[in-house]
Length: 257
Image (cartoon, rainbow, N blue to C red; front, side, top):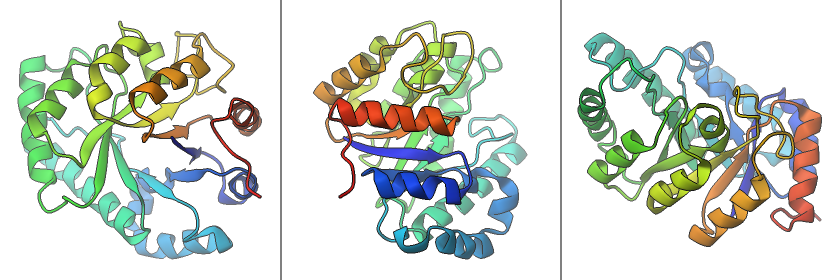
């Protein structure tokens, strides 16, 4: 297991964490459409912000998601979705990222499963052309079950196309528990978003603040696939530090020497 921290604060605030803990960085800044429009300039700025850690810290890029819908029936929405995702893909390659992450984009009861499955398959099958050497992971958000992701993974069936399982989203939005998702999608599980909540909202709390036993979940995931990567997607900086210390104590993360 390789752990990352999701950058939800200014770079200067995340640098001490990267220096203290043996973790990579999931970069969320390039999910912003304004930043994507100015990506060349901002990539140069971002490299300087990382200081000596650039090139030494493993990166994952979180792709754009706001207002995007890869399985839309509207060809103009699909066109913009593909454009933004291609821009983020370019950023991931330029920064040497290990993976790039995109949202599945499904909103319950807006599409039938039949239509969504076919539209999603066509979109991703086209998008993946010429991208065989890049790891692309698809994240659940509002999905109430794993059926759509399972169908997509089975139909695309590419080694570099896999699942990012957000356990906080599952706890807040799914009718099924995390264990059921792991059992169903373990065969394509590649990346995890780790945060906790009380099942009522997507709170992005630290791992000990919520209704899930995160350590127990991690141990189950480790049994299924010890090669997965895991990003702590925790909004409060102090809760993030407490969570990292807990993971150090449990033997999941090491401190830098």
